[in-house]
Length: 458
Image 1 (tube, rainbow, N blue to C red):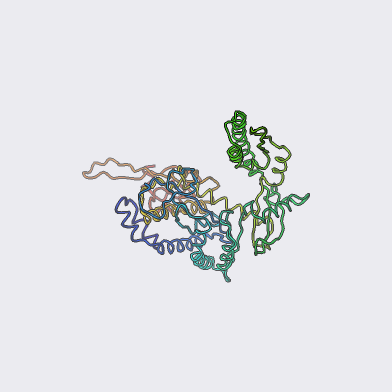
Image 2 (cartoon, rainbow, N blue to C red):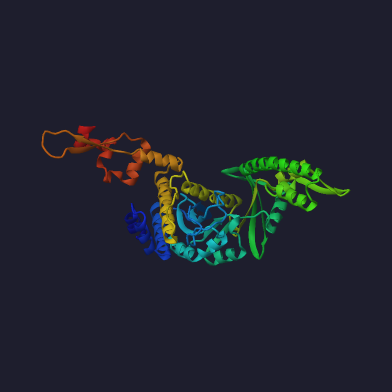
């Protein structure tokens, strides 16, 4: 109810007026509004919330360094702009419809673990609200899907207390990941998942992750493998140029051994290059030299055992391998949701002209409301189009206001000229009850004969 009253009231308010409104809204107000909106959306659109995906992103601001504030901070900007202060957004999204149910605006230098940990109390309230909205006879057991950036053994325990199962992509550097990858490298360990994921292979085992009992699934993604190979090819080309330059400088005696070793390691520090590019620094007669080569056998081993693979970790032991893989793929849809909020998206967060923390939180809240409406519109229409394509279709629903000539004095009478609608647009008119605001828009349907005023202008 707060959002229903507040958002229309803020429409068209700019500058000091917006700041005054933002100063009246607390974090508790925004949290309560989010939970009530989530409850209504789940009940009205019958959303499945058994699996919820969590992810984070951030947005560039152009706030000056000297401007006070806790939210706009320099951090790991997604846009790679290290010169700008950024504001972070964390979102919890439903599996069906990819509808944002809960979000947090956090400082740009914050970590995923800390943000998710701060949401635990709100997660409990959301859990209760969703159970009520879905009218479950028993308490629901939901699974929270997230990427490896938010891995923490303590956080998994806290989520269990909050009533959530977990599904996460472990970092490949984790000890449990090394164990799972070694298991998957055995002959015959990787098997087709089957069903809709027929082109995907996976290996499964149950192991201890720290003190936790977990099911590990190594899943192979051809698309991820192709992307990593492209990245390695680009990085290898740049590394070869750098190594040749270092080789020449070492031969001319312009580099000391320590500097040569450091710069050679730096040239190979990305995209797994250090695992198959062998670089050695030798010293003979007081002169240092660099010798390097690409080990083809190591590169093939890397592609066969690590590249294109993720290690999924979950306490949903009774789930099938296919269900685990499918649930984790839903996390990628959160990234698509964030792309809609980036520059050029259908609901762009920026450019933002806010600088105060309260205004930034309210600005982000309005952006998430827009993302929610776009997702719910796709659910209501069952549209297979992209979000942008669907919004363009809806934007084509227009009625033309025409002034008619009369012999009488006074203001000219106006009539609405109904548009020609496509089948998808007619479906939208019905779904959103647009005839309530523009009754003559329905004249493009068979019921137009009952409206004689429209027949005169048709």
